[in-house]
Amino acid sequence: MSSEDTATAPQSIATTGAPNEATESIEQSATFEKTITLLKAKSDTQRFVGLSLLLPLLSRLSTPESKQKCLDSIDVRFLDRLLKSRKTEKKSEMEAQALVDLAIGIIHAFVTILPDAANQDRLIGRTNALFNAFDVASDDSKQQVMFIFLVFSTSGRGAAAVLEAGDPVKLYEMEKTATPLPNGKEKEASGSEKEYFRTITYLFTTASRFAPDLAVNAFRQIFPFIVYDLETKLGADKSAEREAILKLLSHILAHVPETALPKDENIPKRIAKIISTITMGPHRKTELSSIFTMLPTILHTYPPSIIFHGSPDKAESEPFTFHLINLLTADILSTFPNLLNEYGTPEYTNTANRLAASFENISVFVSFLVESLSSEDDEEGGYLLPLNGNQLLQVRSSLQDVFSQLLEFIRDRMDKDPEDRTLAKDPIITASVKALCLWLREDDSPVMRKEAAGALDAFLLLWECSTAETTDFRPWLIGALPTIIIEGGKSPKESWRELHGWNKLYAALLEIYKSASNDDQESILLGIEIARFLIGTAALEPATAMGERFIEIVSLLRISEPELRRQLDAWWACLANSCLQVAPSRPQRESAAERSRLQSLSMQLINAMIKWDHQEEIGVLSEVLENLDALDEEYS
Image (tube, rainbow, N blue to C red; front, top):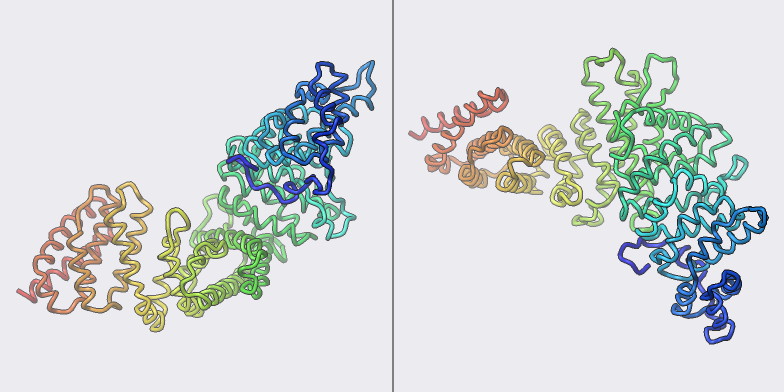
């Protein structure tokens, strides 16, 4: 497509109807000129004859100019009248259908031969009439209408025209009519032979980029209807139909913002029931793939308990939540062994996106699990955690296997290329690191800590690759690093020093402290967590370097006005104290001016913390003042 607002067309669209090179050029023939003359005539009869001659002629035209000349010669109002043909006293139903089919055939022919058809007003301007003519058209022409809309959907203007022209629910039904869904008797492989909902799929892909408001409005109309359609197809003999609908739904959910989903929880509860029924009964692997792909949107929009429901008190041998997590972990564990061999191939992208969705689901579940275990009781008197003790142990074991395989994959990637910064853009990594870090923070397995320590270089690479524009791994990593470094024994501490980890995190903290605005709460909170970690690991660093850091930190220390920013000041002061404690005696002795400044500002900070009742900061600042008093006494 030539326009800037045109999406990349599917290959089958781009090649369909391309003229054969061997086709005879007839632009100079009398037939061509006669057809043009008839198309431009004022008489509808002559125009009709012109269209009848044009239809077989179009595929034989060899130049873009001649094709465009034919389109420009057509009176589009006459085309609209043909599309509006209906049965009357003087016109039979068959005659009306023939006129409609002729008009549809003409438009279909042009969209197959004109590369910019999706941006031609003379074509996309017929969208309303095509919608209204669909029910009158023959079966073949109905398929042509859907193909025309598919081509229109490759451009922003065309996609907007389709969404504005008709009810998206009707479009959904039109597509099912033009390409009926497979019945339960069809073989498993049939789904790969024919594409279903192709037009709607591409329509949402394009509209989400170029007409997002229209895409959201269309989604809000069609979403409840798709859910209802799924509810009617939960029988064992309906898996082929469900497969097509689930694939469409997962695609649409991936192309609309989460804010587009309805606020009430009725629909997600119905979706949860659909998912439960499908996964607990006979189903196809492709159904699971679509479910796993769309689940993150549901889980990020609604309370996770809607999906992770059930009670261990019920007499269920395998509750839904337990079954769902087993399916997720089984999919990941069965894929990882060959994943590195797939890396760099076209198949890897699809696999990576599927696993990324599974890891997103696991990430939400781990968060839900931690919250459930830490909650003393549910406010509504219910039992939050839908797993009994034995099931919980099995889930823990499965998740540990998943994270072990993930760490092995990361290690293998780093061994192939230690400077592979594409690691930070891999969907598997961006989706899995959050879950991994949360698991490392909460789980006390020494085996997992040891395995994670073997990937410290990868974690630091991800830290350095973090940006606001892509993925910021730092808030997740800072939660896991204390577990790996401080509690992981001697080996990770040595690796940490060799990799200059302290300096890399200090550089990030320095940037935050110097540049973050007072209202940038996310950065300030991250800075506080980094400072806390650096304080705990300062003793691992060379003494001379810590003396230099002390001077730098004190020189930058200030008292900020907002409460949260002043908390960062407090931890910055504590970091200065930690560096001073590690520094050699000479820098300690010769830094009287810096110690005095730190003491003065720490006293102001502790007064502010007392005012706001920040007990932790009061405690650590008190330790700063005690240490400074001891050094003053020692060197006085």
